Length: 631
Image (tube, rainbow, N blue to C red; front, top):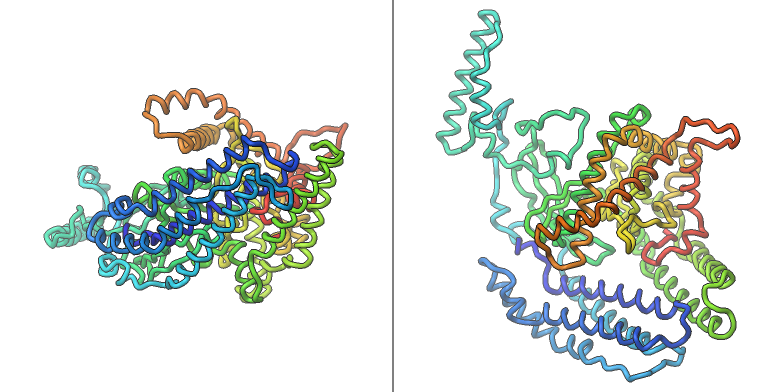
């Protein structure tokens, strides 16, 4: 585990980027809020105190020699301690000089009329950017591919033979004895002789395997290592039968190279290892260090997709359209380490956009930086306006702000971001127009199911880095599928139900969206779930209960089992309301058989309304900068 852990520079860079994002959001709040020019003294004190405490904790975490050197045990402790001492010697004094000695002057206002918290935040942001560039330059020397022999000699030495297993080879001893005691069916003399010969031969092979130390019972099937992610809910098929371990893919060896890839908007460097299976296919897994709440959330996402796939196989309309979803395996290894299945052919919208900007020699952050600068100008403009004449919050004020944001959004779309970046990249990766036609149809079906889940469960955070798809099979990867709650603990209502921005629209085409397979596929998924609402209601209750309890637990100190049970009883009403909200959202998207002569409406009117709302420029321009609606 320690060998695959990110370096101290990588961990500090991740922390710096998170603090930079938080400070930028706070600065935007101060400069765009309609509260006048100078912030209140309480706000100033709260902001400076919060960042001071956070930076102090970061300093204690990374630059205390006792904490860093004793964090890891085992044979790698000495090497880790040497690197920690060098890390402290190089970065401790400059960090404390930049962040722990910031003393802004009281009641200070800059030339733009910005209040003291804005001035302090701008200084913090400037120095965070400085450290971000410094650490990125240091991390840029890390190779994108490392030899497994260098990273982990033990894993590189693993080499297993492909096991020759048959039915029952992986059964337990009790199971095998019960099969032996069962009466044998009557058969002819030749069949009985063949069965007796087979029994003698298999018993001899099993005895030889056991005597050689293979272990297990009746062939040593339990000694073979399986590749993770081959049991429900991480895999779903039409058979719905008892798992057959003897047919599962076994681990032969690890891939000779370990890839270093970027995730979460490039904020995190993770290691990707490959496992060569007995079928000759290499399956890749990301080794991610994440908090337990994120791992549990991804597990619930896999359970949700597993249940949805079973419901789609029962739905008549969904079966005719061959609709299906596949869960993504997430295997916890330690308390803060997990393995996540990853396909090298899976690219996010952010990856494709950054690749396009890199090929053209342009800065990938230019659109979002331009948007933030314009938003600051808008905030200053409305601050001056509200202090002079118009009170904040009026309809005229909000309308002018929306019109200005729409103008900025349109300028980014016209001059900086093309609407066909995604389509060109996919066409370049496919063979020809026939393959692109099949890919577009499969993508529309996958995207329809994913969009319905995003709307029903209030998955509002769908930034470009979290919109990932496989360019070989058009499968949508549900990465960071987090339910959004408001302050009352209920599922949040978002103005943008799901992501349907310009590049996605161009990729699917107007024919697929308006008169093609997207809306019918979305309606078929809703019909399959709403038809079996009573059967799926307990599963939804368990998933939402587990998620909201862990959401509350992640925001407080660990509690005992008795206190967790008391918390569950307190949240029971909110859980029931969330389940009812999910069921009602899915039901209103399903085609209805009710006839209302007084008002003629289309059966898919709700879905068309959601699609119009998700792709409207007037709605997208009001989204947060992290959403990057221009993509």
